[in-house]
Image (cartoon, rainbow, N blue to C red):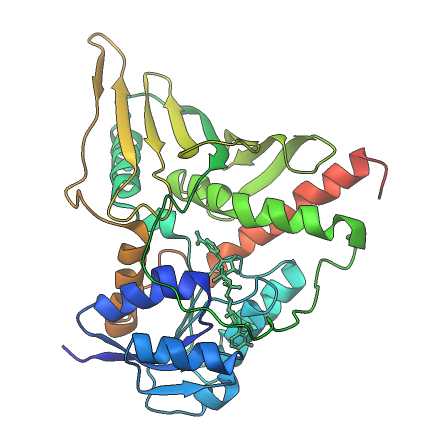
Length: 356
Ligand SMILES: NC(=O)c1ccc[n+]([C@@H]2O[C@H](COP(=O)([O-])OP(=O)(O)OC[C@H]3O[C@@H](n4cnc5c(N)ncnc54)[C@H](O)[C@@H]3O)[C@@H](O)[C@H]2O)c1
């Protein structure tokens, strides 16, 4: 098995708590270089993870032809631009979500992904959760057999809570100032709404992305109704997802765990999944399958990969696809739909508020 040599950009929270430990632990993957604008932090993280090289600028790292693929986690507005620069070198890139804050920005990044040899995977780890894979397989089976009738409704609920749940892996810090990130937003969005828009997008891009995956809806999705409070965050949005009404319930809750579930209703049953707190390592989503009809039953199947972490399986998927050329399950091209939907939600919301 040839080892994939990975270059990683950004040494912040997600890098140190999630992605560097995961990529470094994978057989067949070696993190050979880092890029971090905060030089002292970069050097500390380089030492902790025993990485050969540390650059200050990702463009210097991009000149290293020994690197097979890149991964990026930086400021939400900067990481897409960094990914674009790396894609233009003709190598695969994994990046954290969101890919972009506007369709125009997303399209420019996807143009870069057309460079021969380049392709982009987004860090939508819920698609790699072993429990959610079980949900998807059950949904596919229900749909192809017709045993539960047609899908009648789908719901994503996320009031969230504590996502870190005490994960105490060590983290290097630095007094160096954070780099200034350009505030970018869709051209039509008034500056006063950039903050609420980004908060909503950051959180719920995950849920919309997962619901589209469960329903195999691809780009055949449009926003039907928007009912959000003045905070631009709390409320209900409904979609037409390839002919199915899909609903997103959003809100903030001071919850000691993580309040998120997704449920797909058939005429004679449902499939439901509860998300674990995100940084609770090795805990897949819980699954419930209800079968109606003549004999009713509930099952709570446990995925085969029972002690597993969605982020780790996501890293595995990226490295496996880089090696064997398989398509990414959460590709940049697919993610363009999420970016479009969030712009649409906010445009409708601001029209209702009389702002646009
Ligand atoms: N998938 C998830 O569940 C999830 C959860 C949290 C955050 N995120 C996403 O991860 C991203 C990163 O979040 P974080 O908490 O790690 O941020 P962070 O601020 O802790 O770290 C970002 C790091 O990137 C560095 N950086 C910025 N610009 C750079 C550049 N041009 N070159 C090199 N380094 C640069 C910064 O100095 C910083 O160290 C965010 O965009 C966020 O949306 C995803």
